[in-house]
Length: 301
Length: 155
Image 1 (cartoon, chains in turn yellow, cyan):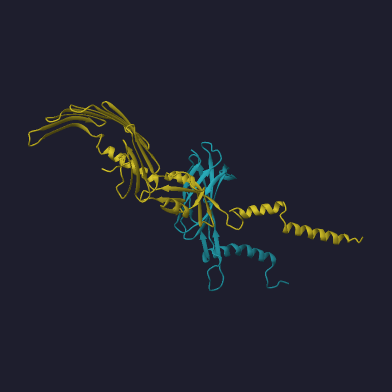
Image 2: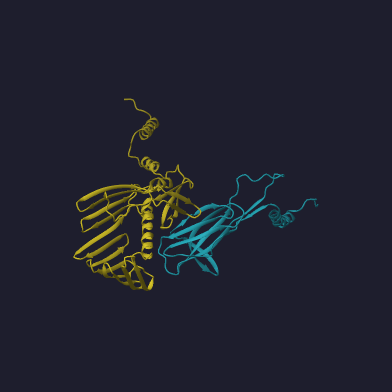
């Protein structure tokens, strides 16, 4: 048997090993590591990302500080989506990280990146985001509470009113307010006597009681806690419990009198209501600047 | 026999005398850029977070690098120590004349009340790769980098 010289044999073995490594799929640590690096978004081919502390601000609502990544020499900013979605009142984001462009598409609002301020500002002039709408609701509620429509808080002093019509009927109204409480008594030559007490001991609690000669006694207690509102109404001899809560774009109202309504406030001033009262159910779709009351049951009148 | 040339000692003496003079002449006649950055001398660290503003008061584009370090005063001199485990954002950036840059810091390590860290801010001019053409073809440029060491204090 012919034998090969040692040097030639070693060279052949070496070439075979090189070919085997280069062409096959061996469990070769270097190859695996290289592949992982190539699959990583931070491969050597791209510029190293810089970590930035960015303040994401929703105008008029609040802000949140996030750890963002600036990639491609500052051309691309990647932000964690979860805290931003929480800020604007949305639930879990579809992906963990988003670029500014993806945020614009997903939220539907103007997104402005100010690198010198390290701030991302979200402008929502049309109140598309749930947080913007909730703020608007709070402002409306506060404005109604301060308008004295139901409880004239902040106003104090005696009140008096006398009305007489061409039939000779008279209506006399007397009372006194100390700001957080009001007592009123009235006498009508047609409907008789009546009196009412309004008390608002706390900003979030309102109590009223009234008696009138031809009508039955009426009392109610209303409590507002964050985005939830509850009321207990006593209208002799019945007691009704009702409540409403805001869950993002959805407002739910229900009452023990077999009445409920779900209101969905969609984009572009679109409102959809599904309501039920007594034995009647109704679905209402509306569009326009005047949103329907989420406490009113929709129906054909 | 003495030649007309200067001896080695005289040449050294002349060189040592002329070198500073030439340097001063170059400073007066050539372009010299001085970075006038502005940093708040004391920054308050609340719950591990601090925010401040840097200003570029010069007339040139400036490259800035920032780091947060431990430090102590020895013989009335600040001696910088190891880097603090913190996110300094941004660490390196450039800003133009008159511009400002917000700087945010989040310290990851535990901060004792009364702790003092050192914010090291280096302002350097951004030198163009190709200098401006001069009639005689000679360009002299002196670049001065300015380093500020300010305090970051946890109340």
